[in-house]
Image 1 (spheres, helix red, strand yellow):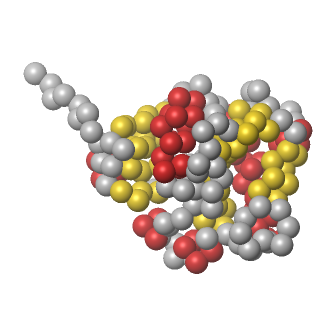
Image 2: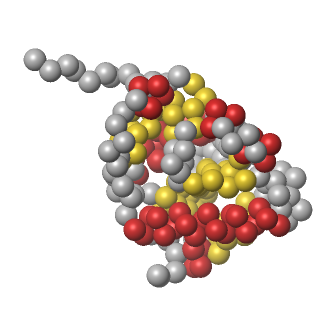
Length: 182
């Protein structure tokens, strides 16, 4: 008789899972498993990473990172945001355990991750008081912009504007450019 899978996972349990090409995350004990993303997903992640890197080179208020990652602020939570910005002092430690603040999170929706990104992880980011959470729908060419207290997102169809604390100028991303064909 086989063992039943745990119904409540911890970050340590997730870290012990095999490196089998799946992305494993846990939020409030719920295991989230997604396969490798589609090429279009990765293209959008790359474009966000480059655009945010260029912006942060001009406005050094944080450092942009792309997954895989190990963001874990509680024993029952470990997330791997697609693209995220952290404060410079925390990034300079070069240790996941020292990342305690996310200034911006962007998740690019995939068919396999949409429910977790839109509900489970979104609620966790709001609870964690992440100032801005972008849910990027690359197929629909829209972005849902969430803030910690929002009951509903702002739907962006033309541009994203991020105004991080301490920056002299906002970051403006034109969605036509973000979603242009390869």
